[in-house]
Length: 205
Image 1: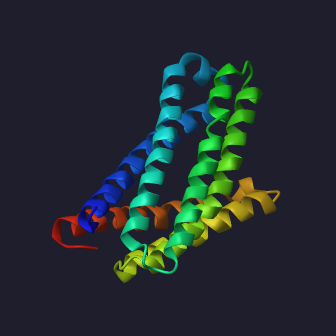
Image 2 (image 1 turned 45 degrees about the horizontal axis):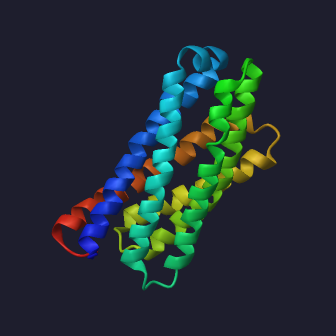
Image 3 (image 1 turned 90 degrees about the vertical axis):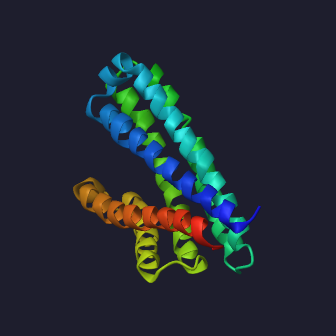
């Protein structure tokens, strides 16, 4: 498979991940956190759709890892970068197991316990994903501004996970950390996805 097709595959997969993650996070998880028992009992199909959306993100995360590996396999850091992204996908896939259990919970605390289990495992996965982004920014021949945002995003993913487990009062800073992670990750990763798609229509990458 040539680099143009690989770049298009990676770019499209990134876009799918982006929209699936938005739905799963902001339309499903946030709804559960706001009203745990009512959401799982009265919006069960929405929750199930969110679980499927998370599964889709894991699937296409592996597709992106494969496509990027094939594109940049001659770089000395590519194999390590790929391992880190695959580790993130594997941990994320395991974390999703907690969400169907939330549907069986009979109390708000029971629902939130399963969601917390999911979030804790996901945070661990994001630590490795952050490492992947830092390396990818050095591997791909991207514009410097995308490199900077991707590097910042990678660092913030890792710092957010560390802070979550180290700070007893993390919840006091949760919104700040969310913004510090979300802004560079959206700008960096979506810019990278668009860069891949644009390059796929013009030349090898």
